[in-house]
Image 1 (cartoon, rainbow, N blue to C red):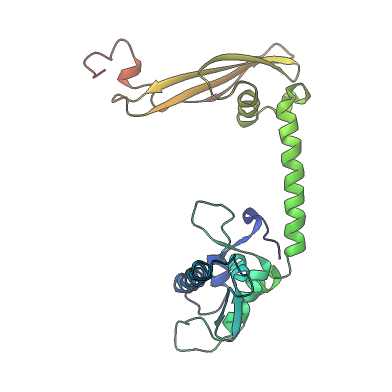
Image 2: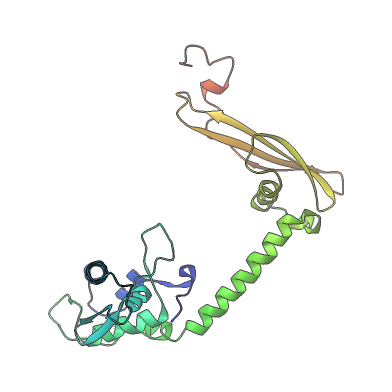
Length: 244
């Protein structure tokens, strides 16, 4: 079963919170431990037998539920996300419900029996088609956006924003300091990038200004301010005595 893109998936912590009396942090730790143990066993088997990865042999029983390595990917999906926030697919959510009903998770409070599961989690288990459509729509929008920034003449003045203009200039000039010009939406747009340093010179940031004259003759500007611009280091009248 294919893994959906993580940006559209439910956070594992959220899914676990929909299971009554489950301790989300402990439940996540238990699942991650079982996944690591399963992978370690599989790698050890591969080294000893000099064989390739065997998906059929990569499985474990938790409670009364059999989980494969692929099942764990649906429960603990990262999607390359470095934020350390695992997501769960709709199929993975159905596995969590099964584990819960089997009594696998440690419960808090006096009641140690599973109870009614939050409807939001139940509905989520049936949302794979909806998420798949969201992914397709996102890919279409991303493709259209990439085409737009490659063809700035197609951009309308009313669409101007700091981030759109920045993406256009980065596409055509890269990340550089200085002054650059492009015809966008029927007007000449100037991008000015000035780098400023902290007093210690240990850090830098940039002031970025996009400016143009609209079709009515009005001067327009979009700006990202520099945090360091007002420092002594960047003022010729006040920068005496600072280490070079």
